[in-house]
Length: 152
Image (tube, rainbow, N blue to C red):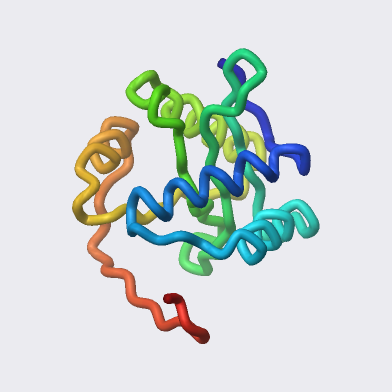
């Protein structure tokens, strides 16, 4: 397995992963044109974040996105881990562990990253266990949101 920063040639796989994740977790089918534009926007403006992918035999088998949150309390950046997806036939083989290790190494080299955050569905005990096994801890915060347009 090879872990690397994604490039614009990976947009198709990343869009497919996001579609699959939305359907698996929420039973939603995302608008492909909106999703494709959203994924490409990350490559068009590095301030939005970056993607990391895992390849096996020249096939992308997993990926995640990093976005940024400034912490004035810590004078550093939290890297938010989002859009995590591993193809079903490769789950349980350490793909996420390798992706996360790559992200941690990249953050360490920068020196201005104070931590990592992610959100996970309450029912996704398998993912929660994976994150805890890698040293992440459940926080005391709940998440709230209000969308500015319909999310049906």
